[in-house]
Each structure stands twice: as structure tokens, then as C-alpha cells.
Amino acid sequence: MRKIEILDEVRLRFPQRSAEFDAGVEVGSASVLMAQGVPLIQRELSAEATEQLRPIAERFWYALVATEASPGVMTVSLVHRSRRPLLRVV
Image (cartoon, rainbow, N blue to C red; front, top):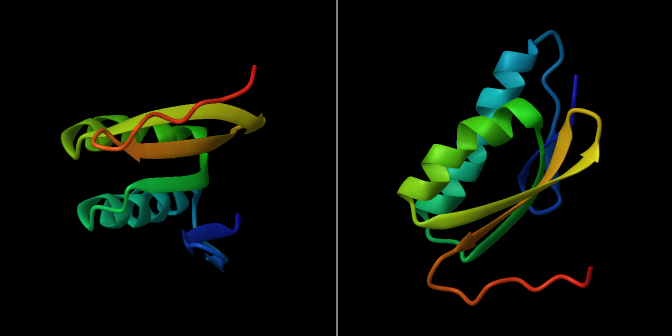
């Protein structure tokens, strides 16, 4: 059971649910934000949810950048292509 961030600083848990259910909620909440046109979305998602989100992000004109935060968990940034790119210090 994971804490799933629905909105900034709003997290939910779904006890007695499978990892597939959690991935569906993660993908659904990010998809709603993309449909609303939020310019920058940053979340921690499961690796499975990240892969499911890639084609949806492309369809909504978002660039998806993912880095591994811990085993099985990715830190994901979704940036609308109309916005300037995020720069990172390497």
C-alpha cells in the first residue's frame, strides 16, 4: 500500500487494493492534470505507472522526464511543450 499524491500535498492510501489499482489511480490523476493544461506536473509514481503514462503524455503534448528515486519508484516531471525546458545541474 502506497501513498498516492492526487494533488500537490494531497495524498491518499487505498488499503486492501492491488498494485494495479494504485497504478491506475496514479495514471488517472496525472491524466486529469494534463487534460486541464497544467504547465508543470511533478510526482513520484511507480515504474509501471510511468510506462503507462508515456503515450498519454505524448498525446497531450507533454514531455515526460523520469529518474529513479528508489527501487520501483520514479520521480516524474511532465512539462507541456509550450513551456521552456527544465534545466538540471549535472
